[in-house]
Image (cartoon, rainbow, N blue to C red; front, side, top):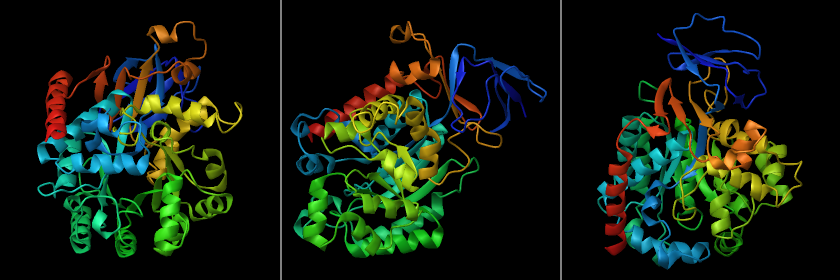
Length: 449
């Protein structure tokens, strides 16, 4: 095993206040030593990476995305719409999604995230038109080929527009098929690979696209196999009103009634919770993924991050779908999180380090991962290094502050499990231009179908 010292970084964010001022030491797939400021490694070093021009972070962790939506970015019919009309406009387009298009969307999204310093991804795929039944298997194969850490959430929709939901009949599945396939995916992929890259979670799409039965059955299945539960909740006031009409309950009461209010669950968006609901979420340890850009694009509102964290809820960060963002860049999302939270809180109540914490340790806690999200002995060697060598950084004084405030967007080097995936801002796993050409062709074909 080679022992690598990332030596003398320009700045370090460990996400835990530990001192790694002179870098970290990595052996195999783990961090084995933090080198304090003015210190030297106690380990015998085989290789040195000169990090003197780099800001060193734990690998960023993305807790909510829809990879397939990279094919419908800036889609004219869906632009400038609220959430429900936006969905109703895009569902007929997405219903034509083919397996090869989905595989390209998955790869493009993962590589785009990787280039932004993201090492762990959670994708929420809930769309299964005919022919795309093995969508999650395809995503698992792409993630393993790229060597990227992923939580693949088996989404589902069982209520079509004919049943009072939003999606067309062609993209929903029967409850028994959903449950059988969910169990199959857990047995096939969850913590089964030798490098510990893949996990599976269960993710009925939303209260307005599945029945109470599928919500309850998914909670029971997740408890049996100790896997995560994920869904969209409290994203808009329209959703709150829908739940009141449909179930006679607000979204969180509904979630509680179907057995989801626990620490296996994390919720995408979580914007429109009242004080009492935030207290309940905190007591249950239920996580929330903050999606600032998507929330701004769809004018959904601002997540109450500070109150949720103070109540005890893990809060992480996500880019959401590339049809409502419209990018898959988690480092840019850190800056967006800082800015939108400053519209809710005072400038000294939510800092650039708070925003970085969301994308690192906070997100790891949301996914119930204690082996990633921070720089500490024994943690996985997942990390991102950024240079401040672009015009936007010229004149900056605090390197860590500059990373967020001046708008870093591309990592110089990225490592997962002790293996370099990006160096000199270049993806090492393939030809990004060739991938983009194929992906753009797939996007055009889907839109014109």
